[in-house]
Length: 474
Ligand SMILES: Cc1ncc(COP(=O)(O)O)c(C=O)c1O
Image (cartoon, rainbow, N blue to C red):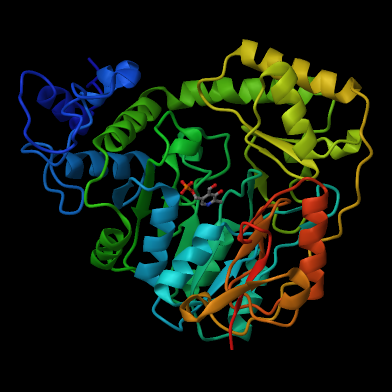
């Protein structure tokens, strides 16, 4: 008989939720005291407990959390796994705090998530940005090549660590396995933001998991692609290049002292579910994705593009990237249009694309609805597509993000900001990666680009509420 897949944390939580009286946090008292407007939550709130006897402690685990974390490590093939209750963002910050010290240099692809810049503010490390090759047809940056990383490390022997994104928001992976070899050959650690790749390990036809590629620290947003609650995520480690005690200390800085047991139990159960059913379910998910690829009236980013662009070695087929610009739509307008008319919600609309995440819960009927929405979109009258300038060159770096954070700052118009040093990291869609990093000098190209994005209905993060830039004061 097969041994049932264990869920030690969830089991302990269930036991604790029955027959006890609590005089402790949280103040809704096991759901009993929830406002009547939240009546529907009562069933779940029973399990919203705190660090009680038998429920262990996230920051010093020796019981059920320790067991659940080590089952997660085993499931992903890591040596150690930590549960995260503040998303991958917290894991990325902890990874940077653990692997770098103030003023140390770290190689980072420019198409990184803003949490990486936030991690640099905390750690004080200095980013050395590497720009991935641009895919002109899809207007996207994908992954990095081992050659580019090797050249960057040769050029700057003071770099102390390398960080990669694997896969990107658009499902792309670069030469991560070969990069791990290049980085390790110099005795440096490889950190990977794999926020979008928690599911990859569970199906052989998906792109390789960053851990299998040899990364030292890997962050997974369980909540993005697994059946887990929002904000639940994982930080995995293997090898001896990073001190695990330093990772645990860093996590204490960025995670709550009252971690949500709902989130941690959802990690415990999502892991058990994926171990048991992941391969079968992900097989079905890929079949559904293939159906969209076959029937979509709009072009989909497909695996046959791999190898045509440097740094694009594989694509996650469960990430649907649909080119709507080819039919005269911006992704922003298309996103609103299909939501309003078909109740179909995309993960993301960029200037050129719509991005949909397929997960193990999707059913053929969901795909039919998506295809109907795409077909209608392709037939609908096409608004005139405004022109958007190419991404501006990376502006000159004057200060590290940490030093920029420490300076007094003020807000000014775009015009006044040109030539000044930015106090804030500004990202724009497309493609959602930093256009201006805190500590960089504001250029006219950056301002023109941000203006154009806003005029096209895109959005930016990092500007003040009235749309100004934050700059350092002299
Ligand atoms: C590439 C990437 N890394 C990290 C994050 C942060 O993940 P989380 O939302 O789990 O904190 C995101 C979020 O969208 C992301 O897209």
